[in-house]
Length: 261
Ligand code: CIR
Image (cartoon, rainbow, N blue to C red; front, side, top):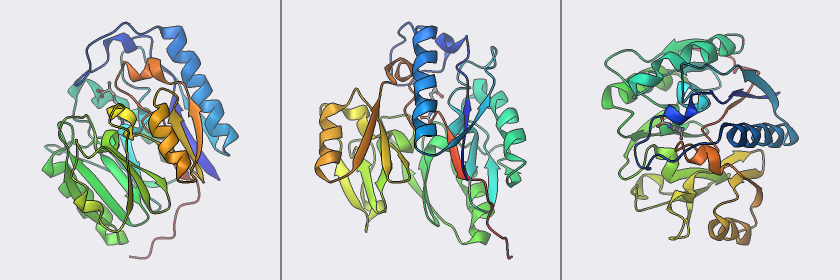
């Protein structure tokens, strides 16, 4: 069964971390309504939703993707790069404990789940303002015994690796090459975001459908012209907190892989 862990929008989301966007007021009701629709969209695509309660003291906790990297064999609890976000990992870790054995990134390592792009046994990890070499090294040591390769990718001009590149089909990536170099993805087909939509690189592939922000219609057309099925949803209010569609969930198969080490 495909499970999506989500977390309700915090009443303090207006105090979220911001790196590349200017602060704009966030309407809590609108953000919550969009988050509810996001959950409904995932449910319609076959995910069972595991909703964690909001945490008033954790403005960014809705962006649950950053708290863990869920592999088939284990879940790695991150140590978020922003100190204000370190308290976010506890509740998702407790939820994940029922489905995976757990490991955790330790100081001085930092890692945000938004920096980890996984396709099969390949992990590309953003070296960003949030994820450092020590964190990436720890992830490599934890994942490589299970056959994962870990390649770091320098990220410049955006928050996370997955702000710049995400999977949209089996071997196809949506990419903004102003923010990352395309060469680590050799062998994959690349679709560039429309230059008018630099923030359009964050798409969420669920089964064969791409969940995608309604605010990037030109890039959406590029995806559809390639035969990709897109489910457009409005996440603009969450976008003001620098969040996209991947960051609001941790999606994984509840059945863990058998571990033979
Ligand atoms: C932050 O700056 O940490 C949040 N305001 C946004 C996090 C978005 N997370 C993601 O894209 N994985």
